[in-house]
Length: 163
Image 1 (cartoon, rainbow, N blue to C red):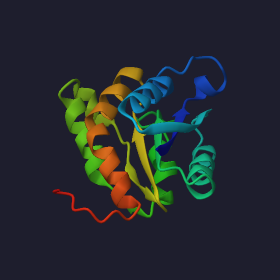
Image 2 (cartoon, one colour):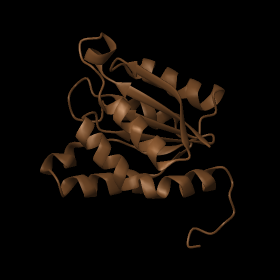
Image 3 (cartoon, helix red, strand yellow):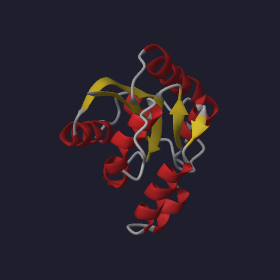
């Protein structure tokens, strides 16, 4: 069972002014894909320090296998999720973000504005997803087939990628 965390980044959501729909959608997708278990879930304001604090705790203390963030990846002044994530990464995995943007671009030209990043901190895979429920769902669907193998390799698995 792979232990996962979902972190929704939203000023309005953190104040209770908007219901989070993307976080629960991601939880449903992961559980349906199995064998993922949601161990942590939180909604946090668009604040780089607050985002980084949660990511570090979930990686360093909770040792989650996977963390998905949703929200804060656009170009608005308050969108700071990539800035909070990048300094924490030991290794960036640009192919994950590139694949999501390429697939999203087939749906909307606005996909080029997504700045989400993906990478590894210690033995945790962190992936930034867009904040809308639809975009989060579509982006996760794009990368979901490769997540088990990615986590396996991050944990030291020796089976070749082509196997």
